[in-house]
Length: 319
Image 1 (cartoon, one colour):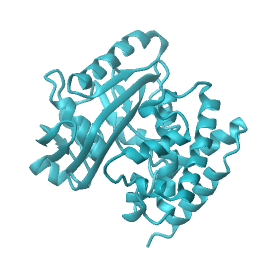
Image 2 (cartoon, helix red, strand yellow):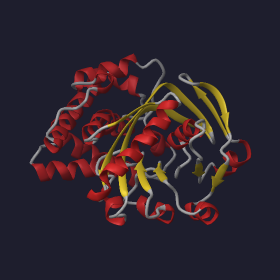
Image 3 (cartoon, rainbow, N blue to C red):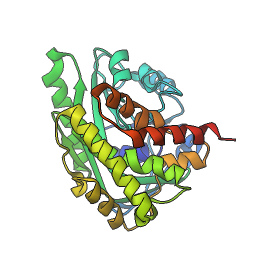
Image 4 (cartoon, one colour):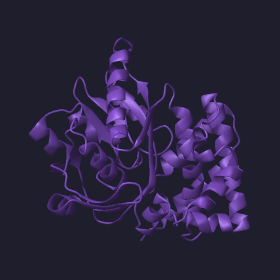
């Protein structure tokens, strides 16, 4: 598991509970805390636990020096292609038979990995989960966790073998209470998640720090969110040629904002938290990549373009 934040810590924990998996985790900012005391996890779904990973490393290179390459490399790094190449950061751990599994947000995240690892199996995984690292190595998780995965690319001759290997990983998660499915075409699920990601993230940043629930309670902000969501629905269907799967009952912008209203605890987006901490935001994969696809497919997305312009100005103003 490369990336020991909220997503990486939560799902490494679930995998580690299986007797069939040996899990190593690479942490950066929280390395010292995880190494000494592990994760303190409060989960509405799974209860309270202290997870002390058996193998904790500060870098991929350290992990490889001790253990060699891996059967699976799960990438839970933030997707910041304007700052670094995630595929380069994990490359040392990828061997001839390694499956690279992407737990990253956004659109168009797969291509750097396909380019760097043309012979490897690259899996795109979409996580539907509410989990936050409240302080170093302290995680708060809601009452639900779902993973949808699909083979994005692999050599044709290895497709059946890699599909079986992906099912093994999916079954490991399922054995530990995570709803986990394998889909032939994962992109509709990625666009499904992007309905919320691509709207609430940037709007929360420019709205002055509002939670998702606060945004939908304001009639003007709610209307803006639904307009952005409509652009995402239209673009995603054009790009994939398919309807979305309707996870959480979200089938249109109205049902999306209604879903937000049902969430019992305030939700603050990851992009908002990054902006408040003066960290780079995932603006490229959340906004810029979809905008490029919109231009390619002739889809008008003026609100997404306006949000991208505003978010870049917010980031440029960090002091």
